[in-house]
Image (cartoon, rainbow, N blue to C red; front, side):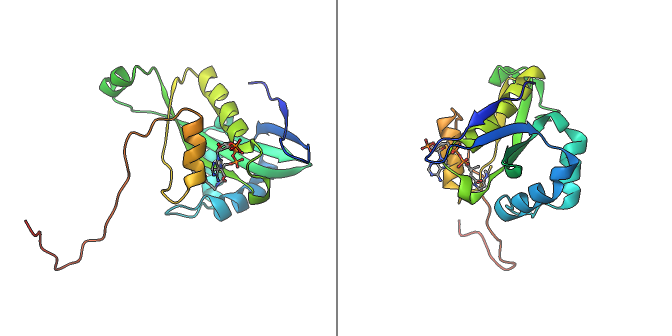
Length: 169
Ligand SMILES: CC(C)(COP(=O)(O)OP(=O)(O)OC[C@H]1O[C@@H](n2cnc3c(N)ncnc32)[C@H](O)[C@@H]1OP(=O)(O)O)[C@@H](O)C(=O)NCCC(=O)NCCS
């Protein structure tokens, strides 16, 4: 995969480098993950190490002036049933697992550029279909994925069952 330098939009033009994650990025990526990408579980050091160990090509960071300002991690979805692949007209499926951009650097195109680089890496591996889940309170992320052409296929829902509750019908 080739790595391009991109120019950030906005009043302050700063160079953003999209590159693969390296071990030295661990502390910063962990802090971004914990601050912005904790959904039901807070990512741990072991999670970050696991991302790198399992899919180094799909673990990318955005670096600006030597600081990591965002990252994305994706993986190939193994074990997708043949029937699903047929229905989706897919050859191989990948998923976006985690995406986060530092708050001060948002709305300047970094999230979209990280995703587009990830999709290029996916394509190089033969992946032609991408899935992901978005926390319902992350409306900005939903807007971003809508803009990038993602189709909403369902809603992930949960409720708590009271121990003594009975069905009313
Ligand atoms: C979601 C997130 C990664 C977006 O990063 P970003 O660098 O700000 O995104 P971009 O600048 O590339 O946004 C591209 C487009 O997406 C849409 N978008 C992004 N954030 C938006 C927001 N908060 N509200 C409305 N639209 C938004 C816009 O259309 C935007 O284009 P525009 O700025 O020209 O209007 C960032 O807000 C974030 O880290 N959020 C917290 C973590 C999270 O939600 N992760 C994703 C969960 S799967």
